[in-house]
Amino acid sequence: MSQVVDHLAELTGFRDRDVMDVTLVMALRDLLEPESVAIYRTVGEVGHERWLTRAHLRAGDAVASADPLWAKPEALPLVTTHPLRLEAMRTRAVTQVAQGGQWLYLFPIATDRDVVGVIEILSTRRLGTGAQRMVSSVLRIYHNFQGLLDYSERDTLTGLLNRKTFDESFLKVLSDIPVKHEVRHEAEDRRHETATPHYVLGVIDIDHFKSVNDRFGHLIGDEVLLLLSRLMRGSFRFHDLLYRFGGEEFVVLMRCDEEIHAGEAFERLRLNTERYAFPQVGRITVSIGFTEVRAGDAPAAAFERADKAVYHAKANGRNQVHNYAALVASGIIQEATQLSDVELF
Image (cartoon, one colour):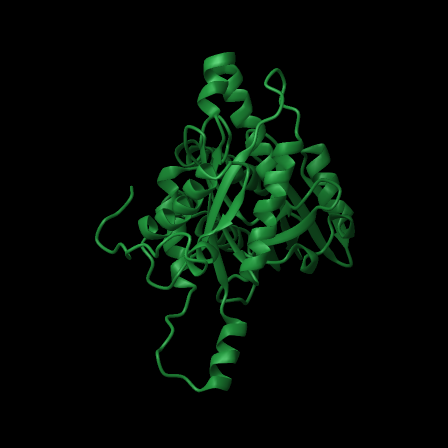
């Protein structure tokens, strides 16, 4: 019993979801001594969902493996390749199957809104009722703690990430961007650019949102915000980080191969919003500005650049997407001074 308590204390001691998932599979491996333990979650658009490995630990592994956070959807297996996992999610019940002298156990992982994945345990021994009940109890604690994290990290109206989680995510992005040296051989520089990830921060602002509240009331205004958040989920990829900063302002933090791909994603959101018929309100539009995140950036500096591009869109007709770098290159706006000591939040 003390071992279980120790693992639960460790599991609830982290606020990082990646660490929590790794801690969970380590705890179940130590408690059950199976051949392997893994967490799989479904990601992607409806009808095209795929399996994302959050953590996978075999009996002899020192550390857990996982799919990269920014994995491309097409590189992940389709959910239809593992029907037993889908069955466990559909029934919301523990599934057990004998496979060549081993036992496969699938425990559904649920949130307050939906079933999002499974815990998969492969064991040479059949798990008794007590062991299965213990796993289910650990998963209930895991679910409850995830719910507490959602409450503190997500906007209560839209379900998007909230403003106070932005800094931590931004710092993780910075740690993935190598600092460029001033002197480098040309061939080496090309190799470096190929391998260097591009991160983009976008700011999205609803045009004339105050008039929506004034004409239709705040309940209808809240419905517009909720529906826009759904349009955002449908316009971006599962691993793009979507935030509501407050009021009608939203932020996207994404990784892309080239900056032009980010522009295409933001343009897709602009078009999806423009074409959508919002109940009672009718048509609304958004103005969007984005900037590439630079090595050594402060959150305030990147946000300010994107916000300047939004301001330009607002001042020139609204319902537009603008790249801060393109505006600077064309001389339309001047380069902002890098902020280092002043934080936005």
